[in-house]
Image (tube, rainbow over all chains, first blue to last red; front, side, top):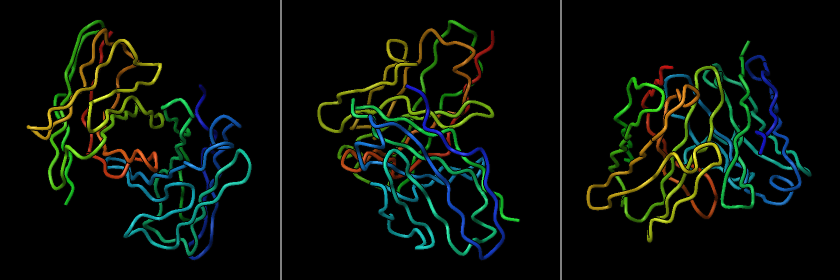
Length: 110
Length: 119
């Protein structure tokens, strides 16, 4: 199964909002609301930001939100801050007890 | 707090084997599903395997099924990844993480251990 499709890069200025898309198929994102998003600063441990499509773990800023439409999930970061600059990955359940990641998106805060 | 520390990475020749370990602390290890994920140089994350908490049932990605084996020792609070028939494309940083079987997501991650397979 091919990786979920994410834009290679997005950018925004401090205070702005950005959205990262994650496109799958009717066999994964389209059927299951089990998309999660991870923030990864290179050299550090990745961090869970969103699970089950739109839920935030305790301690994650409410500037981060998730949604889904059809076969595409999205992560929106509002009020961009310098520390948000990182790589972001989506991940989805595939319906056969397996999971698949997106290719990752590099967020640059200008 | 939750702490996961991977070890066992290093340089190995193609066709060789390596066993990674993940030492867990700060939570009741035996209650948690666990997983392995890797990141090849310049590439994205790739889910490899997970193991259940109770009966240690395992699931694998197609890319490693039959070559890699995930196991756990609840008495030692440890997770393992036995990697056989290694290929150059297995070169990556390997992460262990806790796995939520209800949310199908990875709650907490270790810092990773680097495996380099030379051809």
